[in-house]
Each structure stands twice: as structure tokens, then as C-alpha cells.
Image 1 (cartoon, one colour):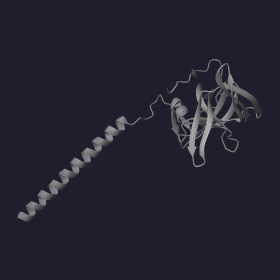
Image 2 (tube, helix red, strand yellow):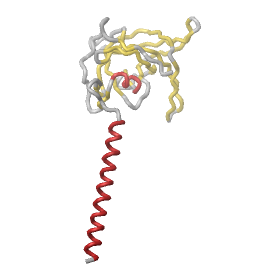
Image 3 (cartoon, helix red, strand yellow):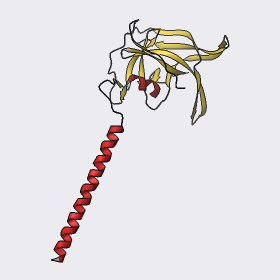
Length: 197
């Protein structure tokens, strides 16, 4: 008789503890779900490759959205810094195939230096100038930071990093080309750059 009572007690005790533990984990999961940012209906979703247009030149290129990079990067050649009226500027050549026309855009561009980017890697320290450039993606023009480097050996001349992605919306790494090829004009909404400082 005692064995039966003890067995019932242990079984009931085990079930009660199991239910309490399950309830605890359900409550923790619900709290984490509330705290975790999720895509809302207002968030726009972008694939890991999208068409983008560099403004004001109207150059359409394929852009890789890369959450592993913080700062966006643009293929630039013959990069040099110089001084203009007491401020640092950058001169560089854009040599990009315009996907909308098939023509190669090859012009020398001058922009104020926004900042210097220092990257540490297996090969040592790499310094790159960063400038502000307008990029049209989706149906909006974004003024974003772009580090300049020769990306001639890369598949994509334009890489959009986390800073830019955070302004666009949500990245779906399973998809590509979720947006029409952007057509920017004077009526296109512009999101100006916001300093991180």
C-alpha cells in the first residue's frame, strides 16, 4: 500500500514539476518574442541582391546586401585624397557598366572626405576613404556612406552594409530582386544621411 501511495506521489510530483517547467519556458519564450524586433507590415523586404541606381549619374548596377559588412562599399579606381579650401576631398574614377544601357560609365568624381575607415584583417590594416553618395533602391533615394576600393575582382560593384540595410528595411537572405528596377526622378523621396556621432 505504501509503495502504491509513494509511486502516485512521485508521479504526481514529477508531473507538477514538468508542467511548472513547461510553463516557465513558455513564459520566457513569449517575453523574448516581445523583445525581439520583427518585421512589421511597414517594413520593406529586400533580397540579398537588388538593382540599384547611383545618383546623380543614373548608373544602374547590381548591389549585394551584406549583413556581414557594417559600411557599404563602392568599386572605385585611381583613388587619391587632396585638399580643397582647407578641407580633405577624394578624387576617384568610377568605371561601371550601366545595366540599363550596357554602356560603360567612366568618369572622375570628386567628393568631400566624410571619414577614413580602418579595417583589420589577416593581411594587416587597410585604410579606405569614405564618401557620401546617393543610391536609389526600391522607390527611395538614400544618402549613404560608401568606402571606396577597387572591387574589380568582385561579382558586385556595389555592396550595401548594415548601416544602409538598416535604413532600407528587412533583408531576406533567401531571395533576390524583390523590387523593380528603380527609376529615380525629381519626385523620388530622399532620405538624407544621419551622422552616427
